[in-house]
Length: 137
Image (cartoon, rainbow, N blue to C red):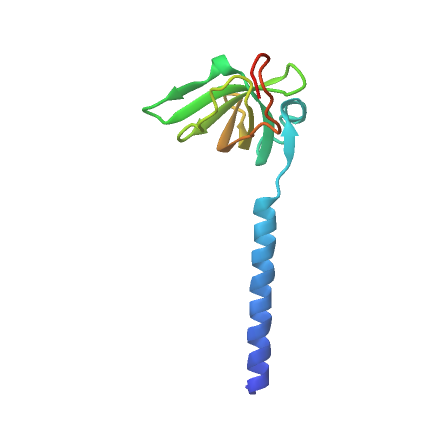
């Protein structure tokens, strides 16, 4: 084969690999984002899909099993009464037990016991901090 043909083949293979890696990254990085009420409304049709669900932690439902390293809690819709049971394997995030903290859970729904199994938990920080009444600046 001519040198020019070899260079062209190598360049095409590299371009193909590059495009494949970009496609793979976009597929992994892009997933649907729902509020609890929206997600519950779409079940069971999207149960097997990996999604992100946003809601606030119902503080008295947080339970962490140190032996199994399993965190379970109930997530409530930020605007309504709808709830979703969450299970997360791993160390609990620092602020998860704080009352009313907003969480984004990434994972999929396990239909057998009606639990959203999260592989990643993100605690949202408040967008603004306000003084309590009576505090001085």
